[in-house]
Length: 400
Image (cartoon, rainbow, N blue to C red):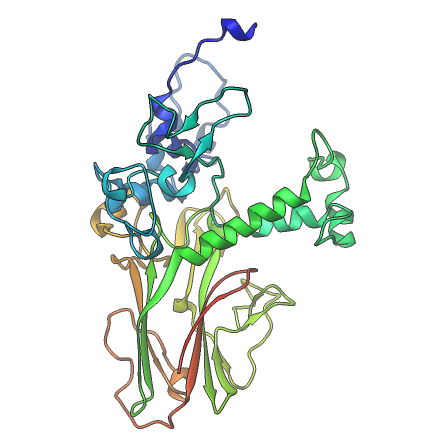
């Protein structure tokens, strides 16, 4: 078709938050029709369960869009962001710089032309159709920094080149069902740049607030606040984990660590070996608390597994404690997502922590009450608190 024959038209759906629902509300109907597997196709009589039920009726794999819609940001007109996304700090094309669509954060406004065609309109200064909206950055960065890092490492000449990864990922479609050398191939510099943007996104996703320490009792309290428009952390459940790492120092020396991470093994220490067989054991001055590990564990009545990695066989959740976004009403969230015994209902997780040996008991309390009666403890001088995304460098806060 000649360029002059092309017709330019507006696509309101692609500019709206509902465009994102197509891929980011994922249900699993894989086993729903098994009872009728012997039915001839198109017999004119059989109505399959998947032809009768709405998508949300199946066990959910992802509900990132529903999380957004149930938050204050999903309301008509949106809502002001918080922290690094607050009005005056973060600009959007919405009135008052509120956040009202997924694109406000994942395709933020910039200035410039939308393509390399000569004479392309500069937005927003030269645009009659979008005078209040800049050129959306077609970045779509989320929180996945691991996959682009691994893909880049398989390319010779990449700054992070790893011959082992090249060998593993270069086996071709006969082994892996994919060919990383097909088409235009991998651009390691672009992949690593995307990884850095994902890391920057993760850095802005949460902050530690209301940090307090009582030297008399040895108690520390803090709040991990979610600044995103969905759960923290959101997305596919079997591959995302966020955890709070707490280190206690005395006179400059580390004497206790909660939820330590083993970089060599690429996982937390002290995990249940039945679920994480490669998790190293805890050291003498280390502890683990799974309530400070924000993640989803799937379960399956089909396989009789309380916790499972079978992506297509889950029927429930053994654990689901990611931090909700601003304004999520828990009763409505249950209707969209199914029963959630871990739902907190506020966009933060409140943590109370005591100096060892009390921390070896129960250092976290969701209800807000102190888990142990105040007792005099040997004061410690410094704490480092790190909010970690598995496999990625931590964002660190500290106080003296």
